[in-house]
Image (tube, rainbow, N blue to C red; front, side, top):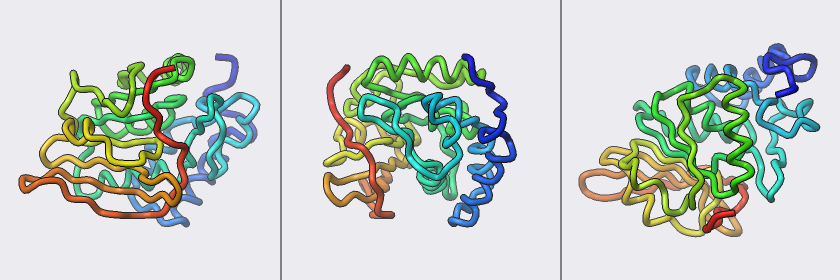
Length: 218
């Protein structure tokens, strides 16, 4: 990869530290999540022409009508999933360029990430290799179907908005596990689903805006 992984100028460690300070000001309290985000060079995972904007708190285009989520949303979702527990075996739906999977891999040893758009999956593989992150297992698949061969998962996180909770993902959630997803086609919000002995418990959380979760492969 041609760009400098360690970062220079607008992609330097100093710029990344300012992003972490902003996340604290915006209410992120989990220091392990903040440390995980600080450890991942986000500029490696965005389009090279947008590298100078990598540490802004905004979603950025990846092509194929997909985006890399804003750092606050990544931090907030992982913080919610970690609250009072470990992530354990984690499944990410919508790997994109691999950024969120790289952050998750700082916090747990088992990360599976699904991406339905093959060129993005290939890019994610290159990006993760560039930062020498080899814990993430990437799969070209339809995210709505999950990854039954590796189930059950303690944690499932979706990086795109579903119109309804995918049934296959509920089936792949371990007892005691948590799934967090953006839900809705117009107004969207984060939905936490916890699998307990008595059944699934849903909690509506923050309002958000994500690209839609699509089915099929490209």
